[in-house]
Amino acid sequence: MKINFWNTALRAEIKATKPFLRTSEFLWQEGHTVHSTQEEAEKEVMKILDIYKNTVEEELAIPVTTGKKSNKEKFVGAVYTTTMESIMPDGKALQMGTSHFLGQNFSKPFEVKFADKDNVEHFAWQTSWGVSWRLIGAMIMAHGDDKGLVLPPKVAPMQAVIVPIYRNDEGKEAVLPKVEEIRKELESKDIRVHVDEREGLSPGYKFNDWELKGVPLRIEIGPKDIGKNSMVVAKRHNLEKISLSFTEIGKIPRILDEIQVEMLKKAREEAESNTLEISDYPEFKSKIEEGGFFNSPWCGKLECEEKIKEETGAEIRVIPFGSENANQKCIYCKEQSISVPVFARGY
Image 1: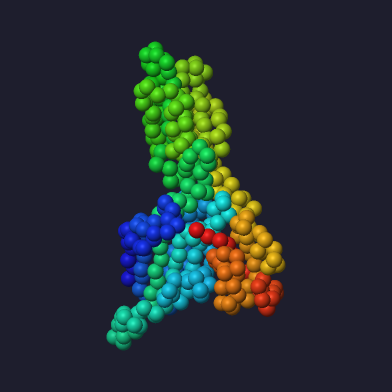
Image 2 (image 1 turned 90 degrees about the vertical axis):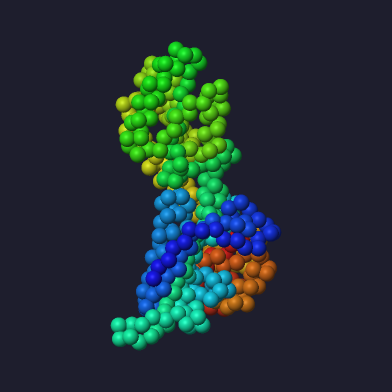
């Protein structure tokens, strides 16, 4: 049995609230599933985590690190919690979503059973998982700049905005038919396009307004462009301007695809530059103020995890899949390590 919710949640958040990231009421998607076998339930946990990862990376253009939470940080009642973590431009970590294997920890006390084909009752195996509108906050932080939002093309409500430029009725009559032609052609290619026909506003005002709203492409068409049989295309993510002839309108979908790829690449490069391999505790403490992901060996003991958080404010955000490592010494106690988790301060 699989149940999916799109709903609001309320919790007692009154301190350190931040729009999208931590609010008393928030919008989220959550799922709950019940299975007949452990294998089936654990497979579901990983399937959902992969769906979340692909959504965040391929749609929102934000790289994530996936793995498990430590026993201290896992969801209360879960056998284990899988998570995806991202690093924001300020060096803080942000939990982007979780998928929990609940085992039979809830089915036994609540007597959630099913009858198998032989009519023998068994306790069910359960999972739960969720993401919230925190992803919107992450997208704003990861890509935005001092001019405003920068939206990845795949999720932008408007992928392109056309700004007609003219000073008088004569110019208007020359420009608007071509603008309408371009709009129809873009819509025929499934591009979400808008024409800014607002009167009484200068082109400069409109340019800034659409930059603030993060529209991936701005197309400028004026009388001079009509004369040259071309248009100016401004890219929001890197502020680059290019000139395309009207016959090259078919390149717009490809340009949007390139922007999507470039935004993820840039975010990944920034994340990698903010990720350090550190096995020396004094160095760890000296650099934690600057923020970042610290890949540091850990013995697996709760006391070391708690001491590191108490002394530095950094916690184990995620133990990446495949990070098992017994060849190093724990960064805190210097005993044999069992893995190399990601330590960081977070939101």
